Length: 93
Image (cartoon, rainbow, N blue to C red; front, side, top):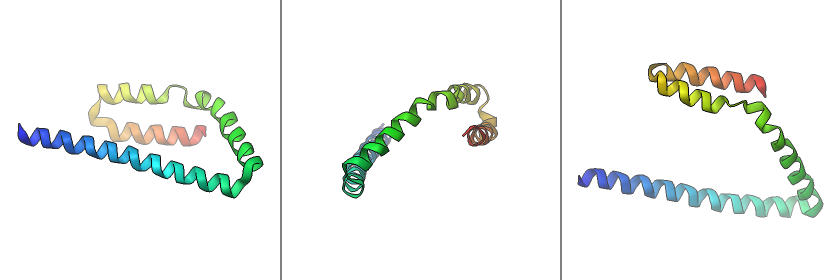
């Protein structure tokens, strides 16, 4: 029981530290971009990112949900399914 508690505590600490590192790197990246691009360039970048995100839904077509369902039904073929999905997403992009 103690080993499972340690594993859960370690996994939780790893998730929290990963989130914290991601947050810190995001803040550093944002600071660098705003300094480098300036107000006008940063506005153009944000517009381009948000405009392209409007079409992200069209390119996904629910592939992630279908992949999860298929892997749950056929776990032995997970490598093949993930490879096929990656190729499909590259071709769609």
